[in-house]
Length: 239
Image (cartoon, rainbow, N blue to C red; front, top):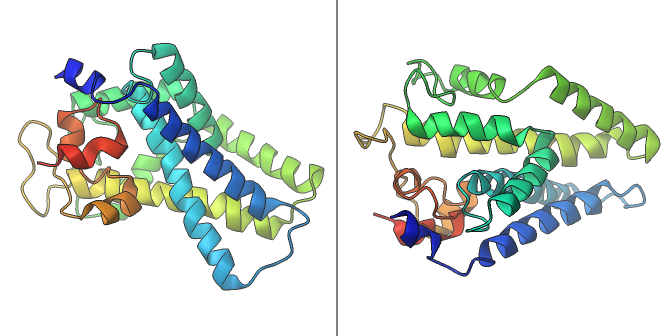
């Protein structure tokens, strides 16, 4: 299975997708944060927030695929560096810690040993989300983000309103998106039956909606069955 997954596509296609997501994320961020940018109508601003939220989610999904060596098949070093850049840009996160925790998720899905799973409180998404976030936040990371915020505000003259709306808010909304569509819905005990081994289920969304909700991460059982399949090929694995 691993060999089939490794050779399923051109080895540089994953790097191209990762580069595209990163450049779109960076370009959209610079566009909205630029100090000389005139204010636009609220409709355009909200669209910018929605697009940036989706691109933030794409950053994390890119790092996630790197943890499974699915971005650059055959190059552990390139996967590692792409993952590091993606999660550092996302929220100054430490790639090695994320990789270790994600390994536990795949080894012990939806169990007490799974850091992404809330200890039996499946009917309370808010408490589950808070526990999920506490597992991925650190004090040094929060301090670093606060320092970066002040550097952008006072050093580059970016208005607080722009930073909150186009940098802080999309990052926060993407954590909700990743949690709800990539963790809560696939692994909760309520709803349709879960796979007995991986304790996961997949969404029934069509491919276009699956892409918009969480880069096909809603096809979650397929991801657990074929972990080295990159996000953009998961629809082809649909059971």
